[in-house]
Image 1 (cartoon, rainbow, N blue to C red):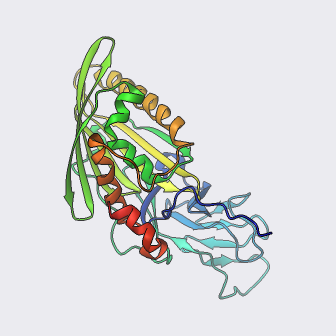
Image 2: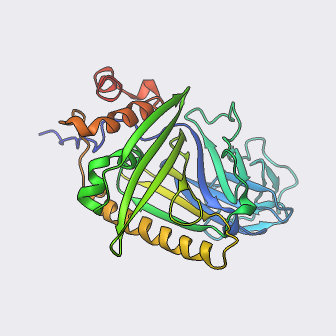
Image 3: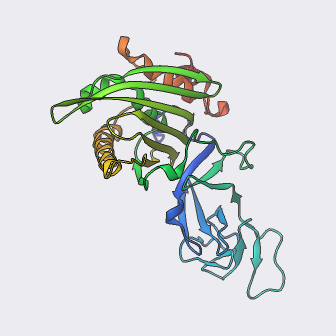
Length: 332
């Protein structure tokens, strides 16, 4: 009797290509390293003593030890904990303490990393080649005009597409969170998508209206601006990064504009983060177990979901989507 093959939870690819946030600047001072497990692969991220960042394959090509398990940063290189081989930020072995010659193959993959906006980004594609375009920019963003960011990192059993669909799923805001049903408007700009969302929430008997502006650039690089909320404007950066076929890392960075009114920014920041974390955890409870519907039964109020799904589909590798399944994603 043959072994039953378990059907994947999502009949769509997990591993899109592009730029993805993997850490925050504050978490990696000079001379420190950390393991990064994304895309089903282990990497080691380290900052050399000269401040340069590097993201390397975590496996030493010598005898397979992991740099992140006991390795150290020595000068501007990372030292393997097993035999003390050292590798520079380019992934090439620079020193073997007991050998005068270094094998040509003594290297580990080095990926492109960029540090901006207080965050650290990696570029990833299936071929493992360098990026053909620069890290996207956050428009009209002056980091100094905002208060200190609040950062959150979640591991969620869900596909990244589902998280992004959730942002425009208007009926669930009323059913799950008790908010108004948002009204969404979409504007496509090439591969990018802008969404304006008008909504409202009741708080302590007061009805608060808000306008949200989403700028969807890539699955790993998108952000949300609150130009019209009670209190100073706010900004949320979001990066969804696959871990494996079942889970993603979701990193969120919250900022509130500095206000001339004493304590106003601090109060607004506390309220915004509290509300967003409450709604996030309410959603996450559902996300962890929900099934993906290739052909969802939809009604009049559900049109935004398929608009977001069609936008997201452009980031899949066509070779990884079977023709029939490709129609499930982009043909609706």
